[in-house]
Length: 372
Image (tube, rainbow, N blue to C red; front, side):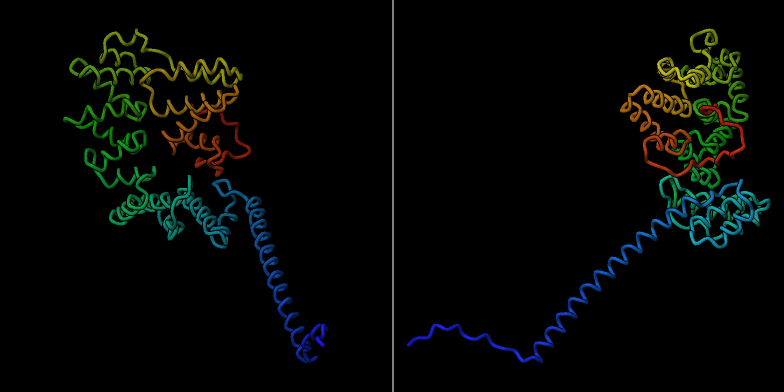
């Protein structure tokens, strides 16, 4: 007879069953421990980041109006190396002698640039100038070469090219092409324009296009027109005449291009009228005035980017946001290191770091709208 009873399940000894239960509990506890540690680590990291951000927001800014005690304490004891360097830069700028400047700037040229943060190249430039003041030409040139090698596209590299080169050589030619409106470029052009030779006119034309208000520039351009105006090529004479009209010297402009002082070229600077329209919030009229002012071909880069920035600002006020963004991107691309280049990048949301210009102190008079 066949039995249909279910076979009995194998029975484990009580000891083996107890061991398996303990192993299972240990394994479960281990999982819980790992999960708990991970959660605690994540929370600790989040709290650290949040706390650091909150402290950073509450930290006082460092500038030339900061107390000496705050600057000294930050320069020596701040755990943030960027903040230590910022304090040292302010202290170096306030130092009277090159020895003190070198002390504060020593070892601060580390790192690379981040957006508009250009401290490493500024440190190298300040070190080079401090060594020049001490009469140590070789040490200064070493800093200029390091700056030019590490940061060849920054505005401070213009100073490096100026001091390492000579007017007319390859370095100064790079300087004039890459940073045409930089003070070092204008100084190089002025030196070239003061030297009799085939490059004299090139220097004068660079001044006329980018810096007719450079110290000594107007006198040099006017003198060139009075002495050689009738012998100059037509295009060069026109450029010089336009520049002299912009600095309100119609007599010299007439010597370069007869009849120009009474023509349409002798127009007044439109910026004061545009500025008044902006202050009055007359957006439609300001838009028309800005569009008209941007037409003349003899605008310098500084004048053009100023007009384009405010044109974009007016467009935004009129609800034309895409056109405003296009104008600001154009300014940021043409003059990224300029004041209006920085303002355009702020408007586009690309940067939130304060302007490279010093902060206006709280008790100072209100700054005027725009730049004169």
